[in-house]
Length: 269
Image (cartoon, rainbow, N blue to C red; front, side, top):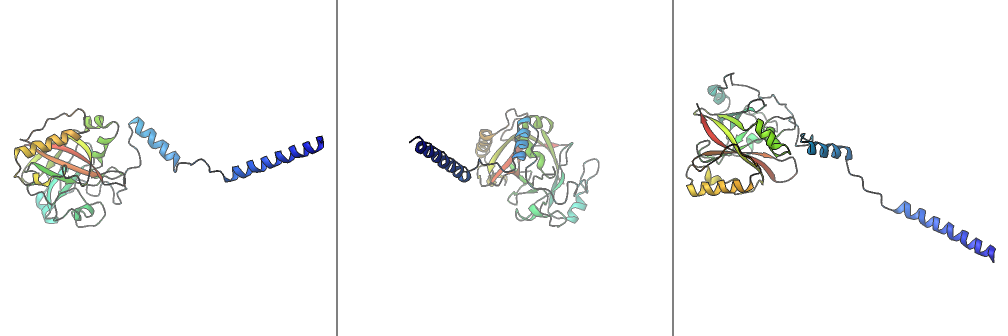
């Protein structure tokens, strides 16, 4: 009897072992995150306030493809040369200690200058441009400016840094941009930024761009901007007597959101 019990126990142990091995070979492995090393680097970068390396796409032409073309050391664009080269040039945007130093165009749609330079060259990057629906650019209550954010730091990438963990520190360094036009020059004094949908009719309110806005409509718009403003400590106040500019760039994600920075246009001598 003892021999039978021994053989039964031995057989039971063998069967349990087989079941255990079968279970291991068919069990699901713990999922491993793709690019786990990259993800760790990104999380560390975000936590430390250092700008993550992922972001959008790389400028195939390079940061200095336009440089200071047609602009002298006194920051005065050569409007005659610019207009001869491209009749759609309406201004120039510049920011100290940065690569932002580009002509601004306004075409008959919002597609051409998204991908083409002021020399008519298709490069997928284009140049900063105003919305074609701006009937009175820089002169109406609201002016809408678009531009790419490039991984190499060019175009309007600088604006994206407001949305990083140390955005307020970035704001301390870059609270003002400058825009030059054939008629007048302006300082852009940043007072708000927010992430919005590209179809957000409240943000992209083109009825406020034609110089026929009511004071009530202006105040309603400013109240809306204040309600979504991610900037905690604005350096500048804004009122319905001001003219403002909206600078819009894409996000680094595959979505329909946009990162928008608002500034008021203050005439410079």
